[in-house]
Image (cartoon, rainbow, N blue to C red):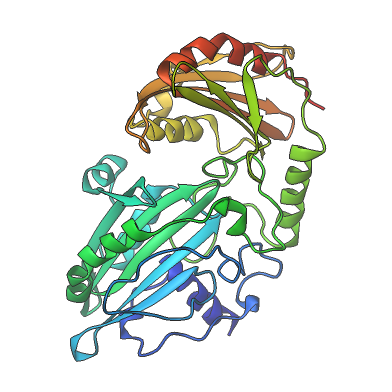
Length: 388
């Protein structure tokens, strides 16, 4: 019974066979027992932020089940149906390629490469920010199935917008789905709101929790996945405590204005230049290696519209950052491109500083001239930090 309930819970995330459109009525809300006891995301939907959106004509809004922030049913001819879900997953994001290939497998399609996925992605907007829409149509058994999936990430929470169901019906409602995405508005400071009240803040993530490994296909967690439940909660609590009570000792450069960074940042600073030009410095911390240097580097490159680099090219993209700790393996990366959110020319400096069982991330990103002017101050700031 627990396995059946777990399958029902994960159906909204695209982790089971795509047969939703055959269901005559919305499945009953799953019990928290369907997920491992103490799982921090088991009640995400119940306390997810109240999104603002405009439901297209013909979409019937239904009570969101476990893990969903919003849920809709679309009825077609001859009993055909489609399901639309909005799911925030704090900490359980994985990469776009992993999710897209999982969806493709659910409609009987072969996996694609990173390059192939990039070519098939369709640009859309969610809350006035660029996002990618992936369209997969295929066959599952004797039925033709269709999945539309859009992914956006905000302050450490991955938001999945997904339509699943009969091939023709999903294709018919694709324009409405895109309009729905454009109508979405997130509430202010939505990151922590997406977590259930009992969930400890996740330290060290301004976009994705860097420490979270990608999730492969299937409903089971990969062997390398960190434990979930009480042990994971304890680890996250320790991380959160470290980000507050054990804050490093640093000297803030002149002109840096500290601002509230939210629950997912240890600190945030704004740096203003001439006119309206400005940049921001984000400081975050993650337990472990933060997902690895290559994964973080490619994530930052993606924010500037740059293509990912391979492991073999990693050494040419970073340089050692020597500071007050001579044995530190800190690395500094520098890149320039176009901000995917604003379309403006943007420069980014990022430092990755391993410290014991933690990894600290420092990122200066914004106007090209401002970042260039602050490069020396940023580097000295990171080099001089004294950790507890």
